[in-house]
Image (cartoon, rainbow, N blue to C red; front, side, top):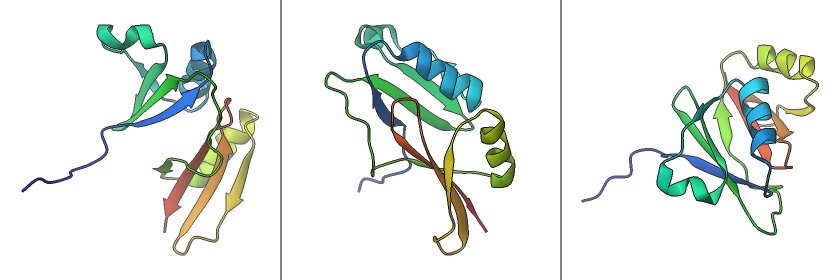
Length: 121
């Protein structure tokens, strides 16, 4: 019997030529590290990132449209510290405390993809 174990990665899309903007946002502003893509996939464009066993791939998509409702959610320790960091980086976010037993925020990456950061109580 097969067993599903865990997500391998999450992929978000971005427009052609946006790799440097993705690197700045995800590495410089959020603290991810860039992961080298396999040689066989480099021709597709895009960029891969990792932080604390969270693998995020930014893929290049023709006719790109950002995700507005669908989104990844990342568990956070010290959400208040993250909110302060985002404020210092001039990254807008919206607090949402309607989820029972958790505090969370939503923000948009530079391409308009929605991201959620959640701290369970």
